[in-house]
Image (cartoon, rainbow, N blue to C red; front, top):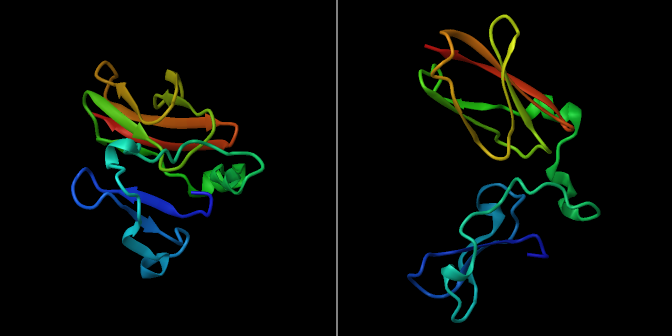
Length: 153
């Protein structure tokens, strides 16, 4: 919403009104959550998207341009999620925050690149043919780089 409130809906049951978070930057009860706080009339949840896109990037010139992280902030705050770890067949790699144009790299223990791919949201990678050992994951973007590792059993 233009006033920085967050609107949510219930799925098809209950009143056709929306839940409201008035102050999304506040923690706990001070966020001002209100059950059915926004009267909507006959609109149902089917009329709204069912998932918020937190990875939409910066909207330059607006108050939303703080969604992107600068280089120094990225390396300090990002944590790459890898599941399962250790892995045997496949791994799922995810980012907890938005970064611009990420590219995923996987290196073996000798530093040889064994995989490279653009990364849009989460990325599933088949590691079944990789020899057992430790592998390093690097995600590079104009916002900065982040790294972690996983074990192939």
